[in-house]
Length: 449
Image 1 (cartoon, rainbow, N blue to C red):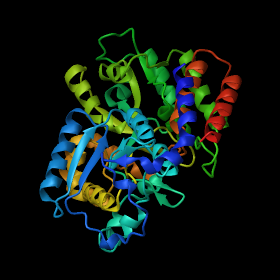
Image 2 (tube, rainbow, N blue to C red):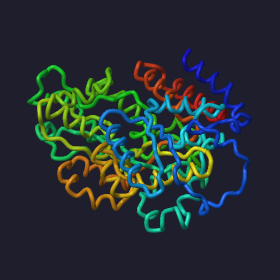
Image 3 (cartoon, rainbow, N blue to C red):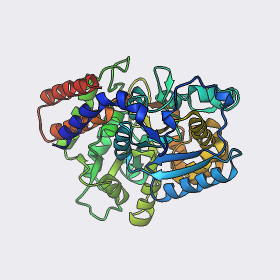
Image 4 (cartoon, rainbow, N blue to C red):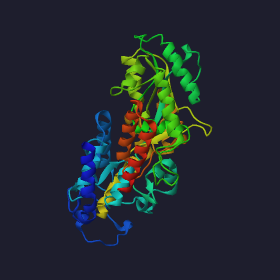
C-alpha cells in the first residue's frame, strides 16, 4: 500500500510542477520570483549572502561538517554565511524537495543522488554547474578541474548538464578474514567467483579457530540490497541498463549467473541472508562469516567491531572476484546540487561547494567521514592516514576500477523493485516469472518519468 500511495502521490504532483515552479522560494525567501533577465556571472556580487544547506549526515560526520561550515563562514572573503540543516535521510530529503518544488521552501544547496538530481533538473529546480566551473572569475582553473576524479564528475553530468558536484565517494568492497583464509589453506582473497565458492564451502566445513560458536560457520551473508546485487553483476561484466543508459536490463545472463551462484551456495548452507541490520558485520567481527560485502564508508565500523566487540583477527578489503575483463567496483555517492534561486544566491552556494572540494578541506573530510576524496591531489595530504588505515588505502587504490549504478530518474523506485525480486527469488519463487515482472515493472517506472 505504501508503494502504491507513493506512486499515486508522484503521479498527482509531478504534472503540476512546471506551473507551480515560478512560485517556489529557496532558502525561505522570494528570490526566485524576480523577472528573468540575462545574467553575467562575472558581474555578480555574492557578498553577504545567506546559504541554506540540506544534508543527511549525523553523529561524528555532522559534527565535523558543522565545524567546517563555521570555518568557511569565518574565513571566506565575501561575508557569505552558510547554515547547515539536517534534513533527514536521502529519501526524506527527496520528498522535501518534491514538496518544495510545488511552492514550498527549498534550500540553496541540497544533497542528491544522481537520479534524484536528474528529477530536480527536469523540473527546473536546480541549475547546471558548468558555467560556475569554467567561469574565469569565480570558477576552477583547468588544473583544478583536471584534479577531480573524472568518473566522479561524469556521474553527475547528464546529457552535458553538470547537475551537482561530488563532495566524496564510497565503493562496495569485499571484507575478508585473513587469519581464517590461512587456516583454510589460502594465501589471498578470491580472484574468481569459482574460488570464492570454494572458500565459502570450506568455511562452512571448517569454522574459524577463534569463533565463539563453532556450530555457526558461513562463507558469506548476502544483504538484500540493490547495490550489493549491482556490484556482483558489474563484477561479471553485466549492467543494470543498456549501453545508452536509457532502458533497464534486469533479465540478463549476467544477472541469472549471479543469482544462480548465490542460490546454489545457499542450498549448500555455505551462504546465508542478512536477517538484521548489519548482521553480516556483527558475524564477521566474531569470526562466524568469512566474507562481507559492504560500503567502504563502513571501514571504521568494521574495525571497531573486530577490535572492540569481536574476537580480533587480521582482515582486509578488496574488489569482488572478477571476470576476464578484470576488476570492477561499484562506486557511488550523493553529490551536492545548487537550487535555482537568485543568481547571487547561486554564486554564494557555489563558493561553499568550491571551497569544500579543495584538497585541504577534502583531507579534513576524509579523516572525519572515511569517504574517498574527489580530488586526486588530496592523496598528498593523506600519507599518514594511509599508513594508519591500510584497509582504506587498499580500497582507495581500487578507484580506477569504478563503475556506477544508473542515474536515470526513478531509479530509487527500481531499487525497491530489485530488492523485492531478490526476496521473492531467494524465498523460492520462479526465477523466470520474477525477472519478467521485474523487467516489466522497471520499464514502466522509467516510462512514467
